[in-house]
Amino acid sequence: MNRYEGRLPEELRPLSIAVNYLPQAEGSALIRLGRTWVLCTASLEERVPPFLQGSGQGWVTAEYDMLPRATHTRRPRAAHTGRLSGRTQEIQRLIGRSLRAVVDLTALGERSIILDCDVLQADGGTRTAAITGAFVALCQALAGLQRQEEIDTVPVLDQVVAVSVGRVSDRILVDLDYQEDSRAAVDANFVVTGRGDLVEVQATGEQGPFSPALVLEMLHQAQPALQRLRQAQEEALGSWLPLPW
Image 1 (tube, rainbow, N blue to C red):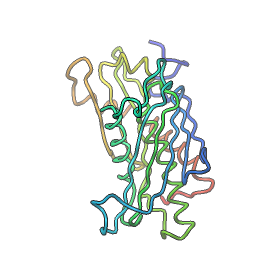
Image 2 (cartoon, rainbow, N blue to C red):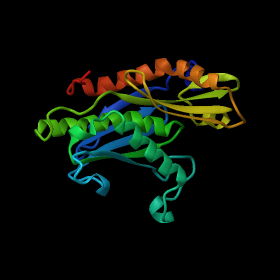
Image 3 (cartoon, rainbow, N blue to C red):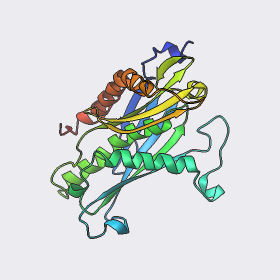
């Protein structure tokens, strides 16, 4: 099976991260992975959810959605249907968990960072692209707080990136596009820190059970792509925000 654009099994699609894409936001990044484009913005609020009030601890959360024509056919807006789909809720919770895992919430103080991840164009891997791009937007917002002397240091403990991996026609492929994902017998999403620690693993046997060893094989195959995603984050941020590790 030949991959689109002749990619190797472990190779990412063409990748770019543009910072300060929306200058009004405290942080913003447009991440492009092939034909998947996700706009990530970070907004600061000087308040926390009720369950954190008085705790001295901050909060990082996320919202995720797709534009009506992000896909080949139009999908109604959530405002029209009156509810978020289960998929949308699950993805935005994943993004929030992934970013909170690498932030010192106590050092943030009682304030919130809301990450809005809007899919402009979808061709597979939107949740993993959103996590990778949202980290860049988050760092910009936190750096702004430091410049304003609201916090002493940028309270980021590590990077976090994510990538999809699947077994398609008995081959392990990294960074699946839609056509590959729709044919995958097993598909997985790995959320990993800069140090290589796992934040979350989502793996599904679309055509039946699979061996636990396959998950480790997939993670191993994903390592070059994970490193390239970290490098892209560093390139996007490094010229004006030295990362603290």
